[in-house]
Amino acid sequence: MIPNRLNKFFILIVCIGFVFVFSSCDNSLKEGTIICTQLAENHESNSLNIQNYLNYFSNAKIVAFNAEKQSGFAQILTEEFFSACAPSISFDGESMVFSGQKNKNDVWQIWEMNLTNLKINGITNSSENCFDPAYLPNGTVVFSKRKTTNVEDNFYALFTCKLDGTDLMQITYNPNQKFGSSILRDGRILTISSQIYPENQAPIFVVLRPDGTKEELFYKSEFNATIVSSGIETSEEKIVFIESDSENKGSIVSINYNRPFHSYENLSSGISGYFNSVYPITHEKFIVTYRTSSKETFALYEFNPVTKLLGNKIYKDEKNNLVQAVVVLKKERPKKLPSEIILKNETGLLVSQNINFLDIKDIANKQSIAIAEKVEIEGMKNYREVIDVEEDGSFYIKVPANTPFRIKTLDKNGNIVKGPSGWIYLRPNERRGCIGCHEDKEQSPENVQPLAVRKEPISIFVQKKENNQIKVDF
Image (cartoon, rainbow, N blue to C red):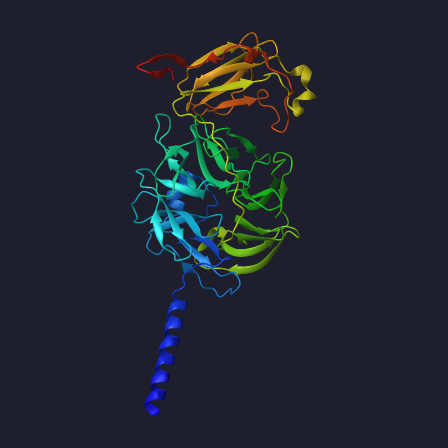
C-alpha cells in the first residue's frame, strides 16, 4: 500500500509541477496591459521632433505594466535591443509594432511583437532610419523613414509596406518631416507634419489616405504651442494629444473630429506640471504620463477628462522617464479606403474653384483685399510658372506626380495677394479640388461648375515625353 500511495503522491507532485511550469510560461500580455517607452536617463526635453530621436531615445526600453496590480514591477519587452521606442498596438490587441535598434550603431528598423508569446520579427531592412509605425486597416503598416534629397539631408517621409517588409512604397513627397502617425476610424492617417524647406515651420496635424492622396491640414495651434505627441481618436469622436508651450509645459488638448479648427479645449489647464503622452481608454479614463516638475521623472497616471483631474498613480520610476504610453485593447478596425492611384500615370490634376474665395475672417475686411487674377506655381528648384485664372477665379492644372509645388495668388500687376501656400504634391492619377486659396477649411464650396474645367488642364513643369518618360523641369 505504501508504494502505491508514494506513486500517487509522486504523480500528483509532477502534475502540479507541470501546471506551474506551463502557467508560468504564459507570456501573453492581457487586455488592459499598459505599454510604454522607458528612457534610461532623465531627459529634460518634451520634444517628439524626429531630428531628436537618435539622442532622445538612446538606450530606451519598451516596458509593460499591469495597471490593476500596481506592484511596481515593469516587464521589459525589448531586452535584446540596445534601444526601442514608439509602441503601437494592432486593432485586435494581439500584436505590437515598434521602432528598434538592435545594436548601438545600427539603423533604426520597424519590428513586430506577437503579444500572445512575445516573439519578435523584423519588418523593415532599410539603409535609412525608420520610426513611428502604426497598423493600417488593410494589414500593412505606415511609418516615418529618412529620405535623402538634394534639398535637405534630414527629411522624413511616410512609407507603407506589408508586415513582411514587401511592397515598400513612399506615400508623401513634400519637404516636411512626418512623424507620430495614428489611424482615424474613417481610415485616414493623422500625422504630425513640420515643413523644413525653405524654412522651418511649427508642427501641424495633417490627414491623408493610406495611399498618400488627399493630404490636407487638420489642425494648427493658434496659441503659439507645439504639438509633441501623436493624436489619438476617442470613442466620442475627439482627438486628444499633448501640446507644449513656450516653457516646455505639456498640456492635454482635445479637439472634435468634425470641427478641429473651432473646438480646442485644454483638458489639463487646472493642473500644474508636465504631460508627455495621453491614451484614451473610456470617456472617463485616460492613461497619461505626467510629472510635477522638470526635476521629476515622468510617471504613469490615470486621468479623468470629465472632471479634468489626475487619478491613481500607476507606476513611477525615480530614475527613468515613462513616455509614449499605449494600452493593449481591442478596437474597431477602421475603414479600408479605396485607392485611386495608377502608378503608370505620371501626372495628377488639381482644380481650384475660386482663388478669391474669402475666409470667414476676411469677410469683414473685404474692401481691403486685392483681387487676384493670376497664380504662380513654384517648384523646389525656384522654377516658377504663372498662369491666368478664369473669370470666376478658377484654374485647372496638370502637374508631375510625386513632385512638390506651392502656389501664390497675384494681382494684375504681379504683386502677391496671398501665399505661398504649403507644399502640395499629387500622387499618380490623383485628382484634387479646393475651394480657393487659404480659405477656412470648414467652409463648403458653392455648387457650381468652375469655368476652368470646361477646358483642358494647363500643364505645369511637364514637357513632352522622352524615351517614354515625362521630362520635368524641376
